[in-house]
Image 1: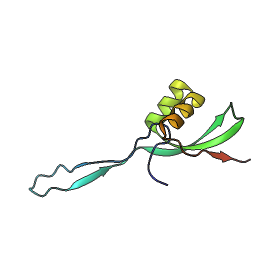
Image 2: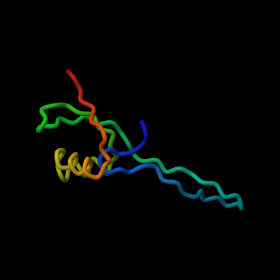
Image 3: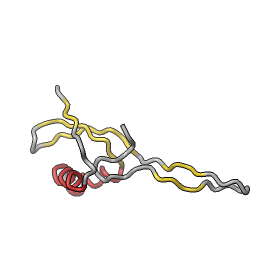
Length: 85
């Protein structure tokens, strides 16, 4: 699975190393991603999302249903994994 937040669409960025020599190299800035389980009240189901810390704050601010609808509209959320108990 690629390292992309399913809510905000954040992904890894590339930048310059800060070196004190003449050699220029690039480095990768990864996103703070983790897998989180949520209970989606509208669907009456548990789901798993790969989200960043900023995505978690977005869910806390807007609510899960509104955040999922916005992410699906923008094209960040392609699939939702349902958890069976």
